[in-house]
Length: 298
Image 1 (cartoon, rainbow, N blue to C red):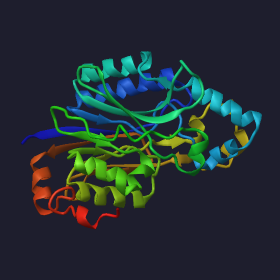
Image 2 (image 1 turned 180 degrees about the horizontal axis):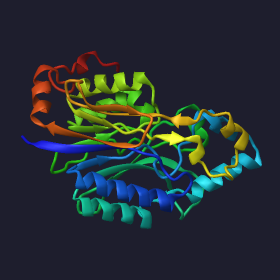
Image 3 (image 1 turned 30 degrees about the horizontal axis):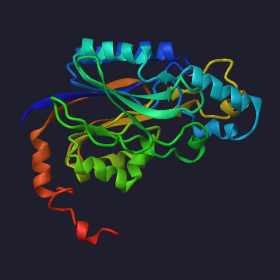
């Protein structure tokens, strides 16, 4: 067993600007890599806008403003693979680290649907995996299509098995079970949920999985939106801080190793002793001796 330094990036994107958001992400990856991190996690849809319920409810109407929000989200989205992914891969290669980052994904070959996707970049700069959010929540369904669910299995790496779920799909027991069966060692949970209950859930899920949990959250202020944002009245009614952060790193026993941090941008670090994984699963292995398929519903 070994010790793996990990980093969780709590930061703000450059709203509705994919090029500058990726440039900022690359700088943050470089900083975390210089800090010794071998696994670096950035927030959900860091490139380059999360459609917050504080204003996005207005997009469930047939209005020109709603259409303009979608158009600008499309313009500021990421083709996978594509040139922006290559830039992120190059940053991962320079950092010699595994990198996970959330993006609004598009397919320019057939314009239309967007997906909330989690990208994994390997230390050699390659795109190791891409998974799409299974179930957008409430207003999010106006913006994102559903993932197919065939991309949930953890991926092998030199530091352990890497996997993750996005935001409230972490509350889906069947989705978590796929990660458990795959023996996930580093469980990523990028989210736009900055409530205290999310921190409690991350501690519980770390113990459930017998894994290290990394949960990055954006820090986002209202004044970081462009002046010509298509829904000015809705945005004006939002608080100064739309997302306060509360990112965390949790060990397999449910103990907080770093965070929660609120009210600022920050990179959180933790040194993860991977011996804790097998030690925790000796006591409680949810996919092993604590698995009871005989009581599962048919």
